[in-house]
Amino acid sequence: MPIELFRQGACKRLMFCDLHTEHGEAVQSNQFLLVNGDTGAIIDPGGNLAYHPLYLGMLEHLPPSRLSAILASHADPDIIASLDRWMTGTPAHVYISEVWERFIPHFCKAGKTTGRVIGIPDSGMRIPVGQGEIVALPAHFLHAEGNFQFWDPASRILFSGDLGVSLGLDPRQPIRSLAPAIPYMERFHKRYMASGKVLRFWAQMVKTLPVAMIVPQHGAPLVGAAVQEFIDWVQTLSCGLDLMTQAHYQVPTVTRYTEVDLHTDF
Image (cartoon, rainbow, N blue to C red; front, side, top):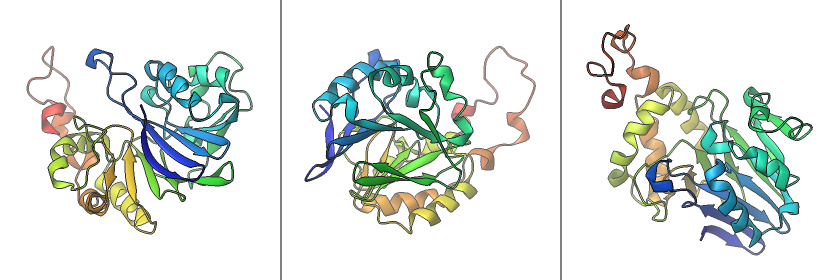
């Protein structure tokens, strides 16, 4: 069953968080269905493991013929590997960074994406969904080279992609205080986010918006005080390139990592 993040009249925001556990082999991922009246959009529909249950879940809230947009934060397989099936089963257009515009047809059979991929410029854009709109916010290098987050003015939810991830926490239990969640977040952010410089730019941008909830693609939503606490935390975080040294760039002399292990260093 999806989690209802927001409902106001015919406006619904739903999170699917348990569609592909697959014996723990696949990383937990969240998918999002946005319904504005008789029109909808999906954010980060996921890979093939998620497709069938997400499609069936959508039918309870929206007919496939009324799905107008698939919004992709970036082009990782856990984001959009199921694209071929969505291109077959719905009339939706795909919105993704211009950086990936010519890459995502590789997920589909020839011709399926023709005329249906809309490249988001680096500066972002406003995307119509029924009578409302979703704002694509630049989040480049957090973590992908062309990366967007999606802010919903109606619910004031920021769908943050890979920023705010909390691996190992129950996605059904919102984070209301950041401190207990940091052990589930820090290692991921230090490895996946490109640099503290970019995080500071992001924090300054997001502070200009009314954000009631930050909902990442993995792990639990941040609500209440945790929203501002997270923004404050990441804008002082050293990560990615900040942590790299020459020791991480050596010709290997062993068959597996023993001396410099990126997973333990980060």
